[in-house]
Image (cartoon, rainbow, N blue to C red; front, side, top):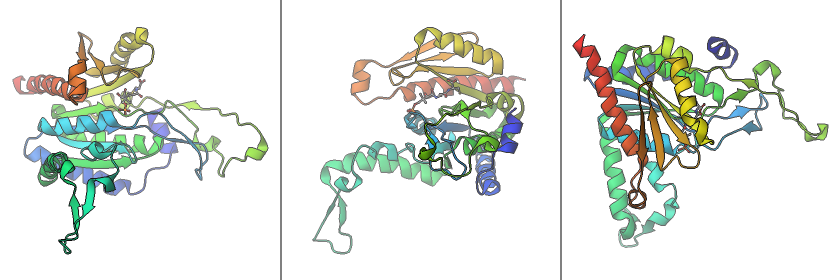
Length: 310
Ligand code: 9Z3
């Protein structure tokens, strides 16, 4: 099913070049013994026409993926950040609610470098820039962009297979909100659908679950974390356990749409651990991703140590 989807849906541009970039990144960090995590982030679009004017989208803005990426970097991981093109980015996300130009001012007294950061933003910008420059200097972050469902799935396969060489020291953290339904290319109109033809009825097909080949074939030794999103709390844990049973991966981060920034459950076959944020932690600007990543990093260390014992 997965292989059929990938062969029938067009490959993203410069896929070979992107594979080489990811491979180089993985090899470089493997040489120095650094763990590598693939973080997927943001929603996927499902086109309705092959010359696409309209598409179906979902709510995800990519804050989970972008924030987690920063915390994985702090934990010493190298991160492949596979993200939707317009979703939030690590570091830059801290400025997403400000108008960039409001952070700056012109200084008439220094004509050679007249653009200055306003004094009230100096501290915050310095701290963001310091973290960002450290990561750039160490070369520990590689961004890979997608927009459509098909681009995402092709790139997921490329990134995952490149990680195979790392065995247990690779982690996959699949936080992207991937579409479940799509229109196969042979059922998609070429040109813009005309409203003059009346109301539109859509028939969507199921997207094959890529977790299956990912765990079985692409990265069989890696530490794989998937996400389960629900709106009904009564089925959250049972659906997570079903996923673990079906795909045989290591862990599901289970979250509800409305409370996803305040509480999640880390579900394994053996346990279910709650991670929660207090009101004061949230009002201090602390983020749940910091706790999630800390916990996963420790579990990943245990998982890696099995290799060393055998
Ligand atoms: C998640 O559950 C993420 O936590 C969110 C993060 C998408 C809710 P934001 O990007 O939101 O910060 O706005 N991701 C996975 C969602 C998903 O599609 N899971 C599938 C499912 O639940 C399985 S992989 O069936």
